[in-house]
Length: 219
Image: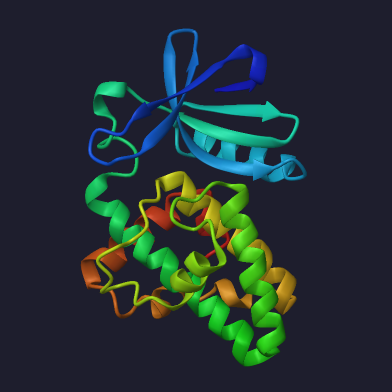
């Protein structure tokens, strides 16, 4: 839809109607957009491909914002529908649980295949991802260690992440996985990793994954 610069838009935040959380909102020519995904400054190609997939292949109204230190993709939303239109609250918790299961599986594979030292480096790297992109409840080494070890399906305190956090996590997890393993085999067989989830929630997550550009990475 649009490729914009920071001076073209106004970015603010509003209170999420159902959770104690501020939601970033981009305003452009009377239209409002909600953050979908964030990319590093050196990921211009990936950011544009993600944006084009959403606009050209899925017909979504999206903005690609180019900034000196990052790229971000925003999806059009009506503020009165916030909480239902993007990342419905009824699904965001199981989506978060699924992403935690994938994260924990990759971490354990690094430990099993590459040893404790590499597992420690991986934990440090994923912690830096959480800090750089401001993931709630993931801002300390203790919090990262908890997320890597907690039983994601039974915990009563799933971190209050938004859809853009989950997309960023899976993007960065894919990047780290390729760095550590040297190939993308770890990103295959996602459904097998999620067998402990209910069949309904697993199917919903896989549908969400396949309907996003991430479906080309994780299979």
